[in-house]
Amino acid sequence: MGKYKINYKLSHANGALVDKSWESPLEFEIGDGQLDPCLEACVMAAEVGQLQTFLLTADKAFGAIDDAAYQIMQRADFPQEMVIELDAALEFKTPTGESYVGCIDKIENNKIRVNFNHPLAGCDVSFQVLVLSKQ
Figure 1 (cartoon, rainbow, N blue to C red):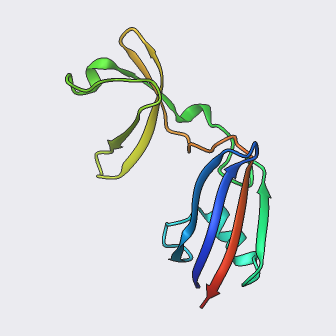
Figure 2: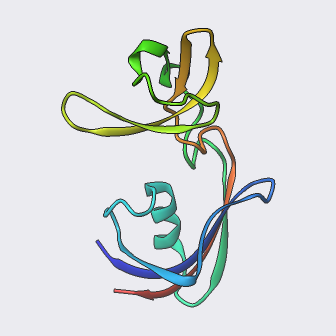
């Protein structure tokens, strides 16, 4: 599909930096999972050697917040020694061995609400990219 070497900066629309690879370029192949497909599409549309900025609305970037991606769990579902804190990111494994990351976003008595939405769901973002090489 294509191999790329890029410098990039991903920010919230409000300017807060989310991620960057400016000091050491990112080398990846389309579809290898290093970049989200919405960002890969921007890279493929960019011209080699030209710094370009893509403004992506939430629906074009990481999607809207999905209420079904919130799960209420019981404190007993977690290891007893685990410290449960707001905004903590935890890895959960399914019975088939797949891993998902969820963030604790509400603690109420023994009920823990875990958000499995992408961390940028519901956010407009700015993706600045400089394609250094394309194969």
